[in-house]
Image 1 (tube, protein in one colour):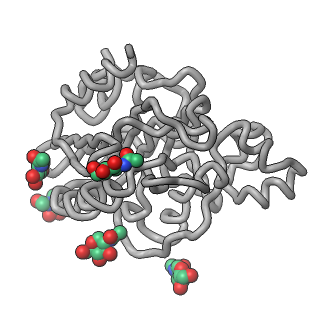
Image 2 (image 1 turned 135 degrees about the horizontal axis):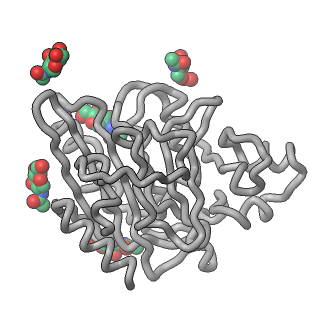
Length: 258
Ligand SMILES: *[C@@H]1O[C@H](CO)[C@@H](O)[C@H](O)[C@H]1NC(C)=O
Ligand SMILES: *[C@@H]1O[C@H](CO)[C@@H](O)[C@H](O)[C@H]1NC(C)=O
Ligand SMILES: *[C@@H]1O[C@H](CO)[C@@H](O)[C@H](O)[C@H]1NC(C)=O
Ligand SMILES: *[C@@H]1O[C@H](CO)[C@@H](O)[C@H](O)[C@H]1NC(C)=O
Ligand SMILES: *[C@@H]1O[C@H](CO)[C@@H](O)[C@H](O)[C@H]1NC(C)=O
C-alpha cells in the first residue's frame, strides 16, 4: 500500500523495505528509513543534495517531467543568506561528473558541454525565463534551513517547481513561515517531506511540468508523542487544506493510477 510506504518510517508502521536509492543520505528520513517505490516516476533520479561537499537534503526527481516528486529534509530554520543564482545537478548529466551542485556555466566550462546538453537531463534556468503568474517554488524551502550553505543548497533547479505566484506569496508562505513555527516547538528534528503532483500543464515548450498540487507532510516526535500533519494546495488557488495522512495517501494513489 502506498500509505505504508510513503511515511511509513515516521508513523512507525514501517516494515523496513530496503531502498538503496538514498544510500548516501538516509539521515533526512525518520529512522533512516527511506520511502518505498510507490511515488516513483517512470524515469526517477535519487539525489542526495550535495553542496560544499556536505549533504543538505534529499530529492526524488522526475527526469521526464523535469520537476522534483518530493524533497525530504529536517526542519531547522535559522539565519543565513539566500542565494541569487540557481544551480544544477552535474551527476544527472553524467554520473562521473562531480557530486557538488554547481552553476550551469561552471559545469559547461569544466566539462566542455553546452547549456542545451545540461538541459537534456534536467530543467535549466532558461526554462523559467518567461513565467506568467508562476514563481520559482522551492520544495525544500531555504527558510527551513539554517546557515549559508544549507540555505544555498536549496537553490538547485532539481528542488524547484513552477508554483502559482499568489499561492507562493500567500497561503503557502504563511504555512512555511508561520504555521510551521507554531506547530514545531517541542519537536525533535522534525522530518519533513514536501512534494508536487504532476499536472496537465507545462512551461518552456512542454519541457517542465506545472504541478497540479503541492503538499507537505511533517513528523514531529516530542518527548511523549508522535504527531504528523499534512497540508495540500491546488496549484491554481491561494488556499491550503489540512488533510490526514490517509487522505493524502488516497489522493496520491488516485493520481498515480490516473
Ligand atoms: C553568511 O553570508 C553572509 C553574507 O555573505 C556573511 O556576511 C556571513 O558571514 C556568512 N555567515 C557565515 C557563518 O559564514
Ligand atoms: C518569516 O517570519 C519571520 C517572523 O515574522 C520573519 O522575520 C521572516 O522574515 C519571515 N520569512 C519570510 C521568508 O517571509
Ligand atoms: C525532553 O526531554 C529532554 C531530556 O530528557 C529534556 O531535557 C527536555 O526538557 C524535554 N522537553 C520537554 C518539552 O519536555
Ligand atoms: C493563481 O492563483 C490565483 C488565486 O487563486 C488565480 O487567480 C490565478 O488564476 C492562478 N494562476 C495560475 C497561473 O494558476
Ligand atoms: C489547518 O490546521 C491549522 C492548525 O494546525 C489551523 O490553524 C488552520 O486554520 C487549519 N486550516 C484550515 C483551512 O482548516
